[in-house]
Image 1 (cartoon, rainbow, N blue to C red):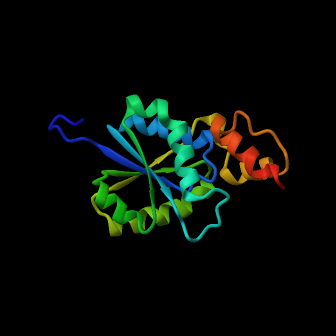
Image 2: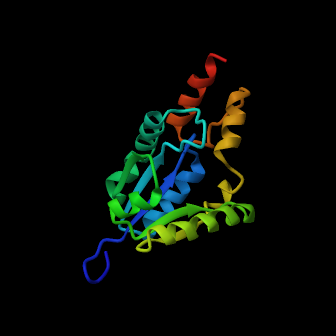
Image 3: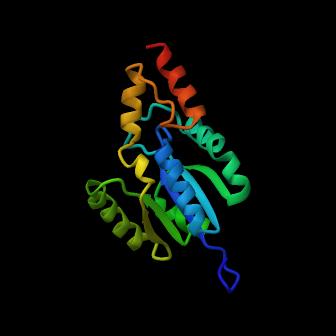
Amino acid sequence: MTSDGIIRRALYPGTFDPLTNGHISLIERACLIFDELIVAVATNAGKDPLFTAAERTDLMRESVAEMSEKDRITVLSFDGLLADLVKQQQAAAIIRGLRAISDFEYEFQMALMNRKLAREAETVFLMPALSWVYLSSSIVKDVASNGGDVTGLVPPSVARALEEKFAGR
């Protein structure tokens, strides 16, 4: 909380399909900077997710449950423009993760558009812990779909959900 009593709220949007320990690392880092964090699980019509929005939201809630108690984390699902959600939630910042320089160009373009649509929020780029820089949801899905062990790459509930999802294949 700032000295004038204003709560600094950030919004961390993503598809989280699936949630990885890299995402968890960013959530932990954001909680060190902001008073409140809203994790917004996107429906994202442009992607064909493995898990439904409801499944991804439930997995996120389960995975951050312990952190939520002390770090004021709210998990919600959303569809539509991020800028509209930023305004609705009165967020001061949008959290975006960067793993490599290749992520920056796309994220920079998105940050500029979000600035145009929601001037009240700044985009804050965070990097995951070094141990998760290589990790992406796509890599996790590829490993899991081919019978590989994703233990330690994703929260336990996500590892179980991936195993169940690919068991019938």
